Length: 356
Ligand SMILES: Nc1ncnc2c1ncn2[C@@H]1O[C@H](COP(=O)(O)OP(=O)(O)O)[C@@H](O)[C@H]1O
Ligand SMILES: [Mg+2]
Image (cartoon, rainbow, N blue to C red; front, top):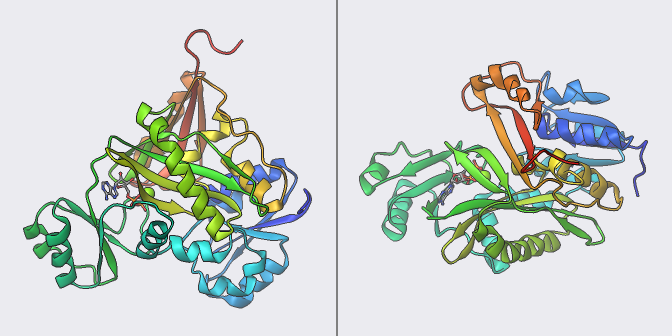
């Protein structure tokens, strides 16, 4: 067990790390962070910040030596340079290696009995057209690596569009377009001894490939499919000997849950848990990696809605506070270009006058 007062290392400098660091502070841990950026937002809330390249193995080793456990908030940290510090890492880099490659991820999930969207590995324009002929249109071409928030994706409406596409020249995977009623995610926390806690699955609405809103309770179909989705998520976590919070995204389709992707970390669709659950995803992640008992994950209000604050809309987001049910989170970012996640607002809603 890594007791409060010890030092937790976080790889990555974004808002997820920032919220992890704040939960760690509640529990009395010190936080060191490591990222390539000069002045990341995590530096505003941690004890020590190291700016170095992901491939700087000497700096990584020194960083890990100063920490009792190291975790990550960003799944695209290159996995190879982490090998020398793998023993200190939670989750283990083998989870990263799979989650970083959309093709490996789909194959891994199929081996465990899960169903991803129909897909075709694409390394060339010919393979793309072959994939289009096999899967039909519409389809989505995604880079195997480094995509997030809908980046590294091209929606293809017809074979002609595929022919005209400026092929990215990096390994990709083509996915058939899934018709779904809604999207949901399974978020779990797992300790090294296999103890697992799940949060309720929110219904997730996306706009332009970016999460816009998570709502609880979600549509009825989520209740029908979440059991199967949880079994798959748990099988993934068990197979990887996973420690920490793991997120799996699903499409609720006609024939059961379709696995979309996994994130070996806390997730935007779990931000509602900060105020909306007895224990947040951030706190349980810290507890899991430190070997502490996991906290109760139950939802604490009849309805919980989390909305992202994205891009220039952030300038007026504080107005949400006129509603006393709203909790505003800002991530401390200074530029607010279109599409950038600046913060989020969570509302706990009671039907009548509110909590007694
Ligand atoms: N095969 C698909 N069929 C239908 N919609 C999809 C498909 N793949 C992605 N999407 C939509 O695009 C969003 C972002 O895609 P995703 O693969 O999750 O990428 P990211 O890594 O950017 O989150 C999904 O949440 C979903 O709304
Ligand atoms: Mg996604």
